[in-house]
View 1: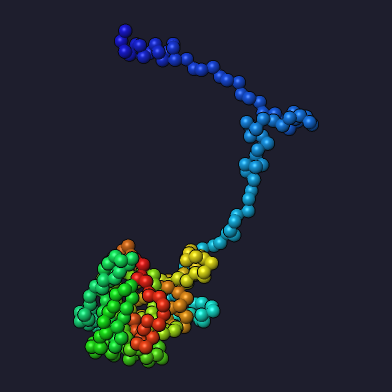
View 2 (view 1 turned 135 degrees about the horizontal axis):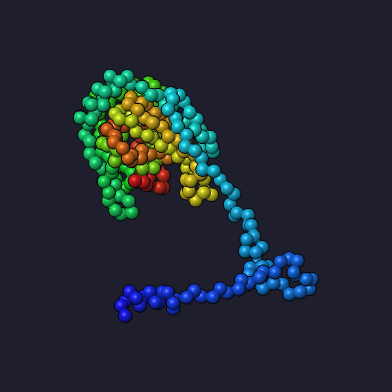
Length: 292
């Protein structure tokens, strides 16, 4: 007999469906008489309340705050707390376009840019940006130091003068960052080194392509370092914009410039600050490296 006919016989005559089993009848409430034994738990009767009983959540439901955007010129009090008031001042177009264009091309070409090596948990890594430092005091973070440099570029001196006039503060130091493209970034951190003193004022001047400056409020101790429910801000920094951070901003907030997923041209960021050599090392902690 051929294989084909044999399979046909098996399927046609021997492979018969199994007989149907009678469906069990679940007693209804009318068939249960007082004093009778409760129905068998095998059908789930009598267990439904314990199986599907609603329980109050251990933690109250919380909404994740919506990220707020700051893009118009003005002063903003972003938080009030035991540390004091955290304030931002945003001035788009602080430098006119022609001056900003000239300053950007000059600094991009003439500053001594280099890539800094930092350390995290004993591992060395290259920062995803280029930097240079000017000031009479060395600048240390992430177990790495940028040596003092008093040879200010003449254009930086001019820019410092106009920033001081606008901010009402005097600055003796400057950290310059060059974000070469969309892949360059700086992770979450605060500018809270001991040598900056309490509640420092940081003035940040942006030149070149737009990048988003993000801020997030530091969580209280009961949140155990969880930033999920903390306030978040987003500040687009365009060519020639000046951003001034004041008050308790460095104590109560972190900031970052994240990587982006579309093309960006170079951006030069100048962060003017005041350093105090006599305060260096007073705090028992060391600033960790920015998270990348």
